[in-house]
Image (cartoon, one colour):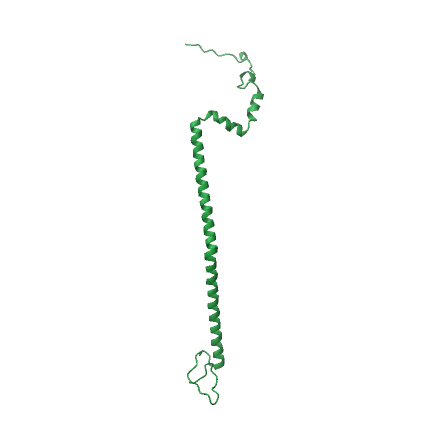
Length: 147
């Protein structure tokens, strides 16, 4: 078995860092630092086996194609729904609105007619004429009889 012996501090030699450097010179280190990202990625070709590169490439291609197909389908569906709404639903909605406006106009006209009848007859709340009276509550002139 070996014998361990303690050396005094004076005995240790000073060693420069350049003797134990992993790089031969600092300029070599600067060249590595200036390497671009694209160059580093292309250097990975040597590290990653071709079989795995093809598998990753195939997977990425499949995902891209699926995304493209889904995006195309959604876009075409949106186009069909939008044009259908403009060509079918919009004119239908406009016609329904016209019909409601016509109904409202008829109701207002009916209300005005009833109020005119009430004003002419002098009897508020009574819009119908009685037998023997003129339709608008007027007097029967002599020689004319209502039936």
